[in-house]
Length: 516
Image 1 (tube, rainbow, N blue to C red):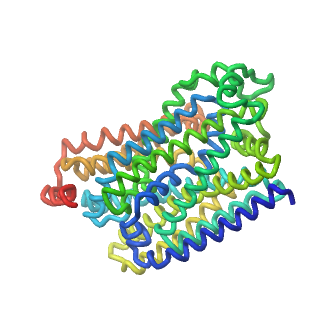
Image 2 (image 1 turned 30 degrees about the horizontal axis):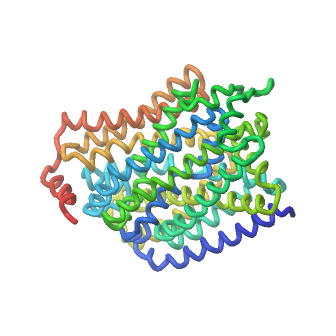
Image 3 (image 1 turned 60 degrees about the horizontal axis):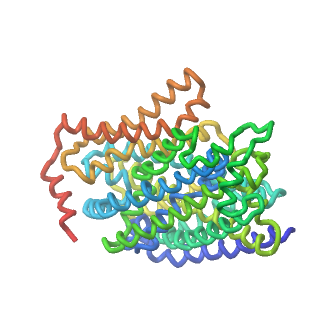
């Protein structure tokens, strides 16, 4: 066993014990459904801010997005990290955090489908939203495993990837099922600190690499870069140093919009605002979360932009997903300090993935246990039974996402490509307009949901017929952005031609903004 493997195993053991202890200590605060799902609406600024940020950035961002876009686009890819921090985080907190907290508390809504039902007096919206969450978020969680599998496989080449996926699943299941949202918020704080430490250390090490030569050397060396003759993705130094993405400008813009504005309609992100305890915590959380996202987002894409220099312009054997693992193995496997940093980076990416996985699984499980099953049965379910069912479904969904990730089921892989855009495209219009306008009707809100889904569905069908499904998957960012725009337009448009069912009830709901 090499030193890198030994240090990584020690770090993993310490990390696993810490996560398990947090789950056990949080059990007492998760005995009620309200406590299990939203922490009794009493989560502070730091935990909420880090929960938002760590849910935002998983190993998929580091291993997938940062590696791919840093390799193909270069320094311009850093704009994705900036956009995520400013648009996906700062603006989201400023516009929606306080209103979401107040309205969901007034409605006693614990999930996004629950919010839709109580805000618009529509059980149909609740069922539809729960089904969308179940179909698209569970497969999305499988992508989290894939992001980590390639990295652990690089450090432990003799161990099957599924073994590491199983370890991730077990760790997540333990503290999530036992401690609920409180446990995830506490672990997200620990995970967030690890992520910041790891990214800052890695930036320093990467920039000091001989092939990079510091930040000034990075710009100069990238400017002089020439692709190898057999490079499957050739590029130029001008492209890699173009601050606006050069020929990839359009692609860059759509990715910024999808990954930034997309968070405005994702239930696993918006749910953090349900749980924060007061307005003062929101003000502090806004600053903390934005700074976290700037460090992690910009750091990840900066590291990705150095990849062609560090790897000599040779794409690793594993393709795009192997870029960041190859970079880590190149810069962190020499010397004791480098090996220690490699262990920290492994825990960083494990932390990033587990925080995203736990949020997605909790959202999916609650959508079925709290929203879908009672609606289908057409009778209320006791909170105690709902809580037990939610715990069991969390366990089941972790297992399902693990199975999906290991089997490479074609339909599941396809759903991953569209999950972010579909879910946000369905929910963003009804969610945002419902917070701000009394004139939005249930018909308008439901129309926005369906319009968002159809935008992606019809576009996918047309492109697939003409150019094949691979071409449709490549256009998923554009379709996701289009779905969000359509949803935001359709909701108020249809509402202007329809009537609110009970205006007095809506007026009472909006009184929450005058309450403390």
